[in-house]
Image (cartoon, rainbow, N blue to C red; front, side, top):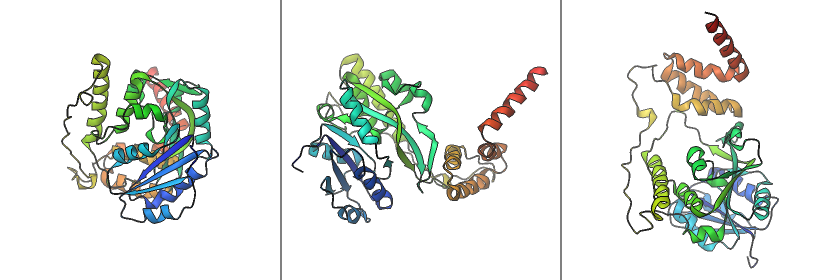
Length: 340
């Protein structure tokens, strides 16, 4: 592309053949057309490259590299980007057609902001959308079209969703891009560095859907996510106190002790008493999305593991009853309790 586009959309992908075409199409079909699309195949071993090669759109810039991880892939894309703005997008999610147009218009109308994010809703791995389940949740916006995010607001709500971010290219380059020492939460570290000297806003607009993959009987727990997120906040507070953090001073950072465990390998002390509270959110989301195929599978796991625990049955029944009926029941129970 000889033309210098307004936006550079960057999407790293690793072994993403199952959902990649849908994600690519949602970018290319945007109503806003003035963008380049840097699509980095980060050493995939499945059919990802074949899918990328099937497209013949001059805006799409394919890069096929050895596996380097998300942060390094994003930095590679930043070095190539020609746009005034950088827009992130994940390889298994979808954007509605007017999302990018709305974002660019906001940034052009409000140049005091260096970074913009917007609300997302979740969908299941089968593409069923759970419109009720959003992040940030609706009350966060206080019925305003957008909300300004300062340091304390970010710490409390973490409302910036990485895959929806539109940011000024010159600012992210001045900050040095993503710091690869953060093996996870590299995005959290970057947003907090933005907040040191720049303004961030979150649009009260839900035009992006994040795909949640089925957890059924297996769920991995990793201490590294919390470790690096907390480290990013610790470094931000140190910069506020002293003007720099250890990485800025050339120091190394400690690595967490990685602890991962599969839920299916956890042996309950008594069969039927293993209450699966880890599946509560996903179970309710499946109800809202109407994904009954996945719902049946998750319900089987919940019952098999916890049928002797009364909380299991409450978890299963509440979404069926609906919030209005549950609230009415709670109110009646409270009234009866007060009379006694």
